[in-house]
Image 1 (cartoon, rainbow, N blue to C red):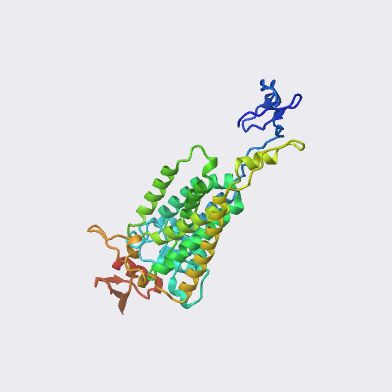
Image 2: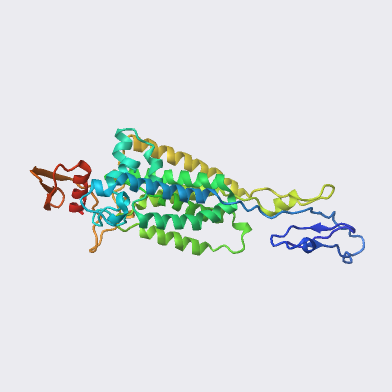
Length: 389
């Protein structure tokens, strides 16, 4: 902060973040005024009282979100009960917490049937059975151990920094609304498969970091703008791989980017200094927010409200966004010679002859015979998924 002149006998005390003991407080003593030309009077000095640095919030909400996600995964695995509902399991020594076969779920997790039961995003159930709550619950479910580990580590790295700077209310709203926005865009474009994961909310936090840097551009010295853009671009590029719901990533990112202009706006330093000017002394009048900050705040708030409302209306009316954008599916998966983007749900026909169960996959024509008497529907679905994969 630039030094300011002070009248004799007045001290300016500034709180320091790294304040030591009682004798180490930072005190600025007045110095003698520099010589001025005759006839030129000094302007009335602005004297500042105790100026506090920006408050650092105690982080507790993001760790609670991590615990809640892990708890939901453990409950999901308990409900899954692979030994009872599947013919084969991975890590069977874990009992009912063992995982589905790799061919069915390579992420070490539950079956798709269990995820549907726990609240995965299933567009047919949202539209036909009015289960709109799935747009929220799917953000708290994960497809496997690898999935939840990657998401929770990212949430801790990104979320704790934001909660320290802006508090639990704003970051919590950012997380929830961004997750909803990601689910909404995913449901409009991916309507034949289920979707789970906190990735939409995570990309919302990433997007808010970018907009926060833009709207508070004048108060930062080290901006790291390019670094942040590269990180976001790499994460979005990973979404073109198969079995990754990149529409949830994009929807969450756009929602978070717009919400960052609304929730993460900071006042200008000049206004903060003005607040701590001592009474009786004048200070240069400063506005709390710059004009461009106010414009971005209004435009972003309108776009968020209109976008989420319009998207929800379209979804509940059964609109398939692919009918209006023939190339948009490439945003979520780009087919190559190494992989296919066809991810239709598994359908099979079965015949039972004594204790022999014959299962035929409708999509690829593969057939297999299993020794299984009185199989449950979940067991048949598990066999079908494995056969069609």
